Length: 305
Image 1: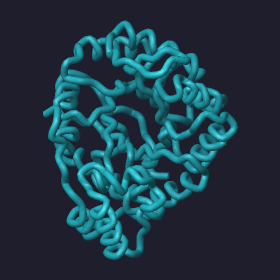
Image 2 (image 1 turned 90 degrees about the horizontal axis):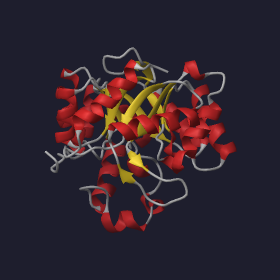
Image 3 (image 1 turned 180 degrees about the vertical axis):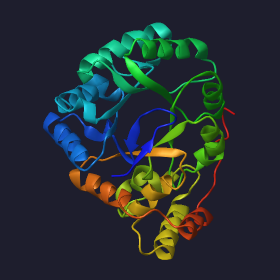
């Protein structure tokens, strides 16, 4: 599988990453999914301490025994939770980050994290304090690099100006092209995007819309009505008939080198194999990219500017 450099780091990540949130709580299944991902050439695993209150990290730690050095391991921090209690609170403080990283390292059964990401963020946060925490962890050798997971323009601008982040995780897909507005600025700062949600909750797969739940029929997806979704899918598959929707979706996310990796989730081996096959297909041609862009909305993120 092809690899791309993550920002100005020395991390070379597979074009297809594995978003581990979808692993579930069955250990045997989770370990098998991670094994399959690695066997298919995926070297970027993305998790968070919040996922199943640390269980997700624990599964990954178990799966990586004896092969930790093969993997670019990314996790996230900032959502404070108590084991066994529902919900969480936002805490990007230096004290909490330095406390939480110890728990993540223990669950992941490793002494370092390749990419430590702030799991959200607002412009009201004490951003300098958060940055200081990450910089100290870098100096201590606990983390190699850090990034943020955010689509808020005002937050992104501040971290690009004030920190040494190497990545920004953003929801990005054919049906959510909001990050494209920021590609040039992000590249100017030698930072990469980690794309999440590339299949738009299954809307950009060959599954029928009827199988995706009643809420899609009622509310659509983002600024697309249900009928618009029907029309877009029909147009894409008719205009670019040689490619599956899955293929178009994943290859589109990689059409600009602002994106280093597509962190796609998968709950079955079949879904994982579909994603691998899609990523291994040839890059989209210029005419295919233009066709996709002419068929979909170039929406802007209107809040938090």
